Length: 602
Image (cartoon, rainbow, N blue to C red; front, side):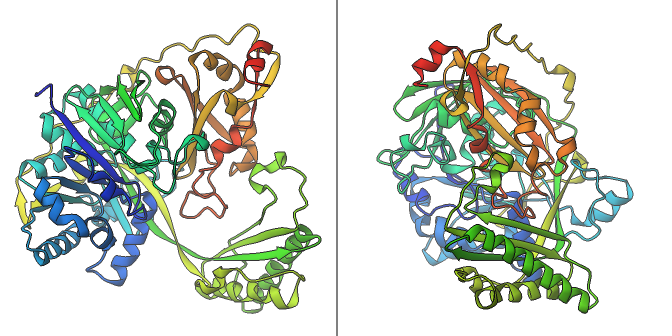
């Protein structure tokens, strides 16, 4: 291993709809080696599946070429900057062909590799017969999924780079593999280098969401200089598994211990068993050090052998949905909106019954502007301007379409002050895509690597053997004998970040100073946090929260189970992605000594 070598990787996209400002920024970085694009949030697989159903030659978005890399192909080739992206979706070879064609138009001979083998749709019937079930709710796997893909790892990406690829396009891989693959290629890490693979995974986890590590969605939003010119991150990666997170000069970014800590635990369940295909990572001993302006060094990741299984995700049709967004303004706006919702649902249910159709499988009403997300802690507000949101689901498209039509009549035959939102121009019904997750044996999904259409010999390295008993759980220190006499809002003591993962969400709470952590531990028990989110659980009576201690960064991580309304694809809530859950928790009161409260200005 070349210990002095630094590999610079730019995190150029956190989702398929991320900003086009990333690439020109990152190309200003001297010595940049790679651009990594994460396109495949779980919800994207359903979109790509529907695209491929409509056109077998599709299954990916040409935006990746048209907007993200097409205008810069000549510079990327001239500077030797390689690209790794999971933008291939359900058709990596199709996207690779488009990239080659675009390069040829510019007189460029690009070597484009693909990683496939993640598609396990043909195994559906076999896995169902074997009794494989959803890993979260134990439901049967869908009979006819639209897509079914295993999460592959980083070694196939490294093999494609070893073969000389300029650009590597994958289907479903673990997000962090887009960064770990280049590091395996550059540093020669092997499958048994568990701590190094964990360090590379941490770098990948920090970079994969783009500007979320460099000021995007940060608790202290006022400290971020300029959202319009937010800087996308660069990881300066070292052979010892450490990384310095930074950004291009001249952007509006903020890279601090707070921004990096929030992203480190974003969408993480057990921080001591963060499982990816190539390694099981322990984040609990990671340390963060501010080593310069917009420069944070990350070290201390520990790794264990990979598990014997791979995670897989199936998408499937879940009926039809119609959404009404109805502005209501004036005296008694809230009462008028609530009455309109009741009346529209009652009318449409009667119309369904008259046609011999069952009632809606789901109805959901929110009067936006009245703090519906706060449940029992909402303020008593009387706004004179609200947005009424009504969601209905039905197995029959016509039933959903009928509601979509009827909701527009409120402007004519219901409350005065009712208007029509621009949503009227949108489809009156749209298909719902749900997801199921399961575990399969590693031998069920064999990665295939191709370079310019020719198969590259690749044999997955032997992996597996993870033993949960190997994880050492440090004892949690006892709470302070006198935890405090003055309650201050959590935001004065901590940063926090939340995000959804299917039917659960996590909330990471990071102490602003190490000495605040004991007060957080004392105040934020599993029971207290569960009660705070009680109104959001699918079943409030059985709502469950797990708490994990992450002492290296002075943090607590909470996993809130069965509280996401079915997950981002099907949740009817205003915040289907659970991005606001940390905001809710940041208002919880935390008892502290009077002297500390005085220091905090309370």
